[in-house]
Image (spheres, rainbow over the protein chains, first blue to last red):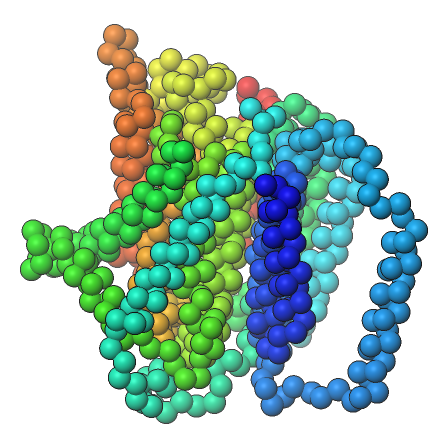
Length: 165
Length: 123
Length: 352
C-alpha cells in the first residue's frame, strides 16, 4: 500500500517538475512548482517527518511561492517583452548544465547508495522529538540561522528602500 | 500518545480533499452545462466601469508589496522554528529559554531596524 | 469508519452554514442600520439565500476573452478546497474529529497560507485591473497579519504544550489530565466551566486572543480590513470577473473561512467544546452539560457567537487605509504579540 502510494507520488512529483520547466508561461510554471512542492510534502508525510512536511508546506508552498509570483508580476513578463536569447548563449547554457549533471552524477556514484544506517527513533520527525534534538545537539547551527535571517532582513530593506534625503 | 502517529492518520484529509474538489468541480461543470450561453463580444470583455479596456491589467506592482512578502518569509521561518521549542520548553527550562531568547533577540534587532529605517511606511 | 460520515457531513454543514451566514449577515446589518432586511421569502426571509443560490446556480458561466481560462476556473476550486481542508482537523466534540493528527494547529496555519495562492491566481487570471489590484492588496494584508496571528497562537501553544487541537481542547475543562489553575492560583480541575478556559488560565492569553481575532478578520478580508474588495474603489476586489457558481464558490469560501478562524479561536482560547457552566458545590452543572452531543452544541454556539461578532464589527467600523493597515500590523500587533510570547514563557516557568 505504502509503496504504491510512494510510486504514484514520485511519478506526480517528476511530472509536475517537468511541467515547471516546459510550460511557456512563467506564472504557469510557478503554479506547477506549487504542485511539485505539494507532492513533496506528501512524501514527507509518508516518511512520518511531520515537521518537515509542514515547513515545506508553509514556507515553500505558501511563503516562497507568493514571493516568486510577486517577483514575476513585478518584472512585467508580457509576451512581447520576452527577450530572445542568442543561439550562442543557449549553446553555452546547455554545456554548463551538462557539466553540472556530469559533476552531480560523478559525486553520487562515489556514495554507497541504498545503505540506510538505521535512524535512532521512528518518531524523529515529529515536532516534539525534533525540538529536543534541535535544541540539544544542533544548537549552534540553529542560532546561526537567526544571524542568517537577520542579514537577509537587512539586505531586503537596503535593496528595497530608497534613501529619502 | 506521541508514539503511535502514522501517515495513515492523514487519510481522512485526503478524503476531504477529494470530496471538496469533487463537489466544486462537479457543480461547476453542471452549472456550466445548465446555464444559458449567449456570448457577445461586449459581454466577454473584462469589466472596466463601462469604458473600453485600456492596455494590459498585468502591470508591474509597487516594490512595497514585494518587501512585505520578503519580510513575511523571514518572519514566517522564524516563527516556525519557535514551534518545536514551544511544545517542549517546559522540560528544557531556563536553559532552553535563554537559547530561544538569543534567537528572538536577533529577530527583534532586525525588526527594530526595519521599523527605524521606515521600510514599512506607506507614503 | 466514522470519519467517512464526518467528512461528508462537514461538506453539507459548510454549505448550509454559509447560506445561513449570508442570511444572518443581511439580517444583522439591517438591524444595525435600522432596516428590516429580507422578509418576503419564507418566514423572516429565511429562504432568501436559498433562492439566491438557486439563482446563482443557473446563471451564465462567463469567462472573459482576455482571461487565462484554466487558472480562472481553477482558482475558485483551490480557494474553496483549501479553506474546506482546514475543517478536517477541528474537534467538534470529545469524540468527533475528522482527522486527529498531532500537528493539527500547524496544519491549520498551513492551510491559511495556501489560500493566498488561490487568491493570487484568481486576480491574475482575470486580467482585470480591479481584480489584480484587489488580489495584490489582499495578499499583502493576509501575509502581514499572519505573523501576529502565528505569534499569538504560539503563546497559547506554550501554555498547552501541544499542537494537537483535540489535546488542547481537553486541557480546558473537567476532563483535563494535567493540573489547570484559574489565573495561576486556584486549581479548577473539578470546577470546570468557563473558569478553566484558556483565557482564564493565563491572563495575557486574553490579549493573544484579541490579536488573533483581529488578524483573523484581516485574513478573511472582513471590514475594517476590506481594502482588497473595497466596493467604492475596487468594485469587488479579486472576484470582479466571477459569475455564477464560480462566484458562489468564492463566496462560500469566504464564509467558511470566517467560521474556520472563529472555531480555532474558540478551541485555543475559549474552552473548545467545554460547557461554560461550572460545578458549584452540589449543582454539578459542568458534569451535566458536557459530553459528545453537548460538545457539538457548545462549540457551535461559541463559534457562531464569534461569527456574529465579526458581522457586527463589519457593519460598525469604517475601513482602514492601506498605510494604517500596515502600520497597525507592524507597529502595534507584532510588538504586542511578542510581549505575549515573553509573558507566556515566564508564566509557565515561574508562576507554575
